[in-house]
Every structure is written in structure tokens, then in C-alpha cells.
Length: 198
Length: 168
Image: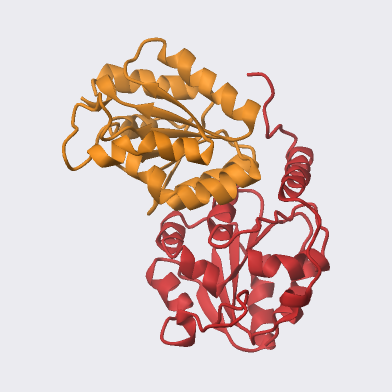
């Protein structure tokens, strides 16, 4: 399975959802959609936590987190917290290529050996945690995200690709991405995010 | 901490508008947790690591919550990566409520905690994070409001380090 193909299939579903991609997915996601509800973080190990906070703070909005195996492994403590807090407006897609693909040497991650992220998530209390290995299964699980409420954690086993190494880096500074996102929240939620004089 | 001081602290947070708090329980300020839990004004998020406490608070803050992270001083060391890569790099306002373990006025200080205390300020300064040390309840509400105003002015985390009377 190919991550770009999966993300291309995800794009048409995005309307007013808030999307938080981890660093490995953000290059492709940023090329595929300029949705104002995208929050490009530019770091590993943070997307799930930030997306979780967003889902808790805005329980009426659907939040989509796009993660990778290396990033989830870096912050495994997120999984018991996710299982405990169980926000029903959050969906997590983990694109698991079983490698540290952002490095130049692509060393295998723990998921290339015995680690099963969906099993860890399930045992941490995330009941709807599944692994999908082909596009049809991905599509099926992805559709459910938009059809019914409930926390979902979908580990998509994908082949390792190298397009991100050649991809032109965005010149959109993280601050710019943040303000664009925050103004979108302010407009769609009708409230101020950053307070002025208190 | 005396129950009255705990109430004062929670009331101060409330009147400063803090309405979302991630926490990892610790000893010194622990009396504030039952008070916040009883108060529907606060949305609480228990975490497994202070590191995710910072990231979760960042997400809530960007979604429009007035967010705080309550942690022991050691949590600052644990969450340094998240403070740097999300809160500081991204510029996210949040209030860090930190029990200043191992500080000079920590009434529970011992050989177990003292290194954590003596390294705290250099670490915060290296991160470029504003902090204020509180050792008593005088003008507490005003000082919390000042910190919240500062975090919004900077669009960065601001740390309140609690020691002295808060560590009894």
C-alpha cells in the first residue's frame, strides 16, 4: 500500500475537520490540500498529543491526526492517555512503513520486528484500533471515520517511499501555518483564540 | 499546602480564565486536584507523561481553550522536547503550574530532590521560558492573572514555580 494514494483518498472527505499531520506526512499532505484546518507541526512525536488536545477542547469538531510509526513510537505514552480520555471525535491514521524513512539510511523501526501498534493501542483502551494491509481495507476503515462517531486508530501498513527526500520543502513558516489555523478556528468557532489585553 | 491556600490557587486560576488543565499528579500541590475536579469550569486531562501534557495543552490552546499544565518540577525536564518543538517553536500560550521541588524554600526538600531544584532555572532560561517564583499566597489571584496576560502577550508558555508555603 502507498501512503500518497491513501492520503489522496482521504482528501475528498475533508470539509471542516481539523487535520494534524506529523512531520513525515505533512510534506505530502501539504501538497495535496491547502485546507485552512491543517496544522503543520514540523516535529515528530507531537501530532497525536496536539490532536488529542484539540479534540478535547473542541468536542463538536472532528479531528484527524496523520501519524507515522516512528513518531508514535517516540511518544508511546500517548496511547494509554488516548484510551483513558477516549474522545469520540478523534481519528488517528498511522502510516507504518516499518522504517525511519526520514533518515538517509532507513533503519527499520520496531514495527518491522515484533511491535504491533494497533495491538498496543487496543490494550491501552483504544478499542477500535485496527491494522489494514491493503487499500480496500484502508478505504473501508477510513469511510467509517466519517460515518460514525467514536475514537479510531488505524494503522496502515505502507511501503517505504522516498519522495519526501526529493520533495521541495515548503517555505511556509510554522508560525504562518499556526496563524492561518488559528484564524480559521476563530472564524468557524466564532471565538477568539489568542487574547489581547487581559 | 493549607486547604485555604489550595482554594485560593484554584480560584485564582478560575478568575484568570484557565479552563483546561493537563496534569500528572504529584505531592506538593496535590490538594488543588480535587478542587478542580469538583468545579465544572475546569476541563481536566490526566496524562501519562508531562511531555504529552504540554502537547495536549498546546492542541487545546490552539483550539481556543485557556490551557495550563500542572506538573512536578521534574516534568519540566521530561517535557523539554515538547516545550521546545511545539510550545516555544510554534508560539503557543499556556500556563505551566510547577511545584518547585528541590528549591531553597521547598519545605520537603531532601537529597532526593535538590538537584532537580538547582537545575530548574538554568533549564528554563536556556529554553527562553518566562518564569515567576511564588512562595506565598499574597496577591495570588493578581499574580496568576499577570502570568496569563504575559503568556498571551508573548504567545509562549509562562511558568509559575510554587515553593515555600505551597510545599508544606
